[in-house]
Image 1 (tube, helix red, strand yellow):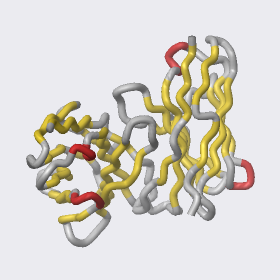
Image 2 (cartoon, chains in turn red, cyan):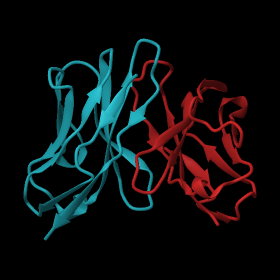
Image 3 (cartoon, each protein chain N blue to C red):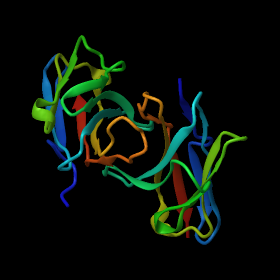
Length: 116
Length: 114
């Protein structure tokens, strides 16, 4: 079974530039998550989709971050414009969960973003 | 609102010693609890989880955790540490009842000395 795929693995941009990350979840997984993980901290949920609907985006800085999950499969996360404090690893995860909370998440390898 | 507290950002043990990583949660409804491990430059992978039933849960690589409702804890243990156990460990909680947004702790770095 293929795992969660993310690209790119690494990205370096200057502040005020834009960047996009792509995630392909495990086939059949209804729920997809985007997390921001700052060095030395736990993953912080940015947005959670179930199929192509948003379950929670309360911690997504909507003035600069956006995400979509077209057709309930792949997802993209965009930052525009980037700030220095956006430097972090962006993790994508997927799950079989459909609103119960009992299923574990499967994580991709992450995208390490450096904003200079 | 739910939350997770992991006591100790770093835990250092000798190879062969007991591993104990602490996790306490707060939740207004019965929680579902997870432990994940993260190796350098990799994503997280599940070690074990508690949803319902037996409160002592066994996971991969010899790890286990016990759900103690009275103490709101879900501590992770392993009888004998191995060098390959050195990694970052995260405790996470979700809850049922319509709100199943996951919350992660800040993580504990396990250091294993030869």
